[in-house]
Length: 52
Image (cartoon, rainbow, N blue to C red; front, side, top):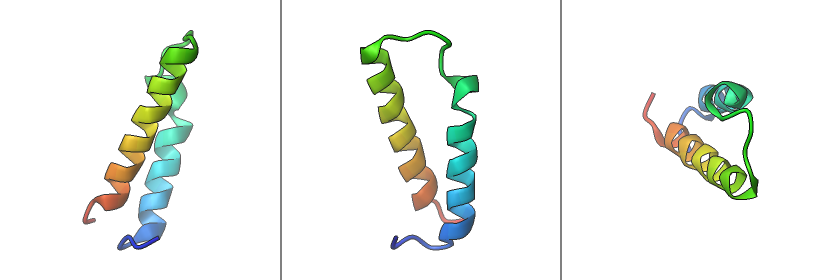
């Protein structure tokens, strides 16, 4: 993947995504779903790029 320490970071990203039901609203429309998916991508890329 080109990231340092990818195993640990992938575990963190998976945990973040599994917890999406806690940080995403219970009800959303298609536009909000797209926005939530975009946020998940940004957060995932941010975590992967961190120096841990």
